[in-house]
Image (spheres, rainbow, N blue to C red):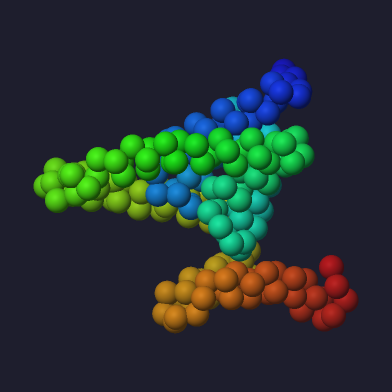
Length: 190
C-alpha cells in the first residue's frame, strides 16, 4: 500500500528532516553519501527510483558545488518546486554547519592530540569503504553492456593517469553516451 505524500508545510518539513538525516549521518560527502541517500529517498520515502537517483547523481557530479547539496536540491525541487529545493539544501547542510562550528571552536586546542589523529585516520578508512560500496552499486546499476564497461574503464584510466580535469572526463562520457546510438546504427539515430 502506497502512503500518501504530505502537502504544503508538512511536505517541506519532511523534505528538510529527511535531508537533515542524510547530512547528519554521511561522512566524506560525494559518493560516500549514496548508500544513505538511497535508503532515505528510495526505500523509506519512495520519492525516487534507483535509476533516477543515478541520473541525478551523475548530473550533480558534473555541476559545480557539493554533490550532496546538488542532488538534494534536484529531489527537493521535483517534490515541491523552489521551496522544496531550499528545504532540501538547508536540510542537508544544517548538520555539517552545526558540527563544523562546534569542531572549529575546540579543534585548535586538540589538533595535535594523538587520539584525535587516530580517530580521523579511522574515519577516512571507513569513508573509503563507503565510496567503494557506492561505486559497486553504481556499477551494478549502470554497467549493463560492453559499451558502458569500455566507457567506464576509459574514464577511470583517463582520470587516474592524466592531469585532465574530471569535468572534461564527465563531458566526454556524456558526448559518448549521446553518440553511441548514432554510431551503432550508422547515423540513423536511436
